[in-house]
Image (tube, rainbow, N blue to C red; front, side, top):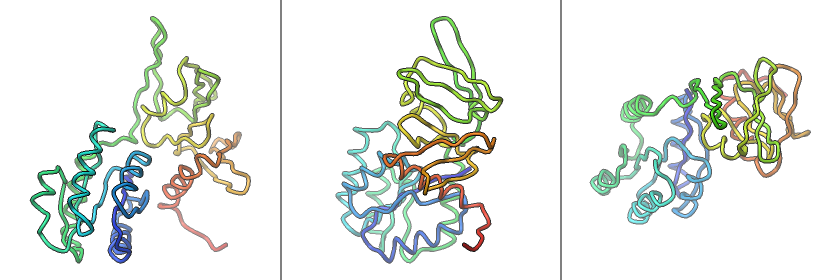
Length: 243
């Protein structure tokens, strides 16, 4: 299981230290680092991180307001972990539904306990799920593990399956993208890909190759950040070779 996190911290030293510490936990990868509340809200809505680390030393009051504002846009906000040089903001953090509170400098034992607790709390969203395609009185069930990718076809969507079959549904690609597990990433206006079947990313040609060896799907500049995130996920557990 993999989780992504966002850091909201204007202090370059502490956010680099946190990223370095988090590298010890292979299940977590950094979705981004931002400096203030406005960029924080935008990044949370854009990347849907599982965990958000907030340095409360900058301006704790603004960050607590940011949490309240998030409820206007999303039903379930990410797990929040406050970071501070003192216990000054701990009580307010708990009142504002922060999951935990870390003191600087970072304590390895405290971090490990928190991360183990939140891994138990977070759902395994990459696990295989069953997708139901409904059309009038017809109900078709697809195992998400068997979907290679989704392709837009006007106002319909084609599901390209591992066994080579194609299943069509009369809903837009966007509507499915909002419901699929996190191992499905949109790379193009017309494509959502199952990252478990990606064998190659060619940034020169702007294509992703699939493990079945037969297809290459284009990705566009609009979704380049999604592809960069996909590269980070795939690179975490790989053996790198010299250029």
